[in-house]
Image (cartoon, rainbow, N blue to C red; front, side, top):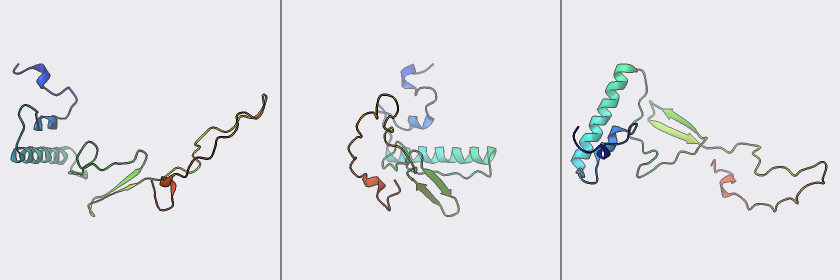
Length: 128
């Protein structure tokens, strides 16, 4: 075995993490070559195992810079021929922000809370 076991990425981590290293930084040309090789490998695998599958590559999602944030619970539509990705985020109607006041034995329960300030995200025209 060559090298230290600590120099390898942990199991389950993508091999692309080897494209850069603190002790051996790659120049821009080496990074571009690595990206193209990885892209070609993905397309070869899709062509071999799932030739009718739409491949979406080179989208800055997740831990990238710049980063595009996808809201949790949103709907994502991929339009392959149009080369367009649309993300829709909507608030669920009837969402309860606090539990209802108690009723029954022991009285009506605690006094209602003060009204919360308006949520700018709930403004008309803002889907998030």
